[in-house]
Length: 120
Image (cartoon, rainbow, N blue to C red; front, side, top):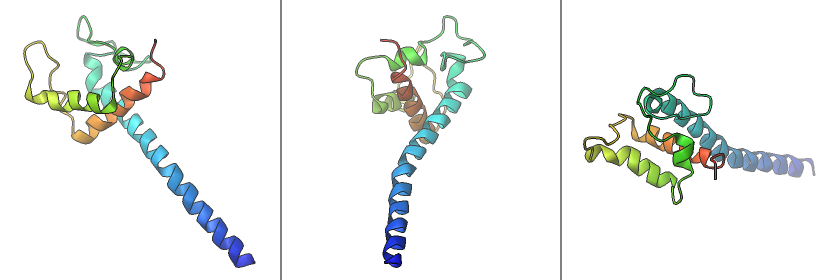
């Protein structure tokens, strides 16, 4: 009887750990995305409500909360824009942010995290 309890407890611990890992990993990705956005994107965009320095671009590019509120926006479409625009930059377009693909994924996840908080 005692060994059954130990096995059940161990199995539940594994299931709980596996269930929590993706959520923790996703949250970490959002945090990394915010950091990349603050380091790279904040020169042109307001990336968070508590951004210390205003963008140097005048007028600034659309804020991240405003971008997040756009209908039809997906994590994939953000990532495609941020990472794929490098091949088609024209005068007046957003410059290449020079971030890695992993950072682009993190930024897109951060931006989508703002969607829940974005104004309607």
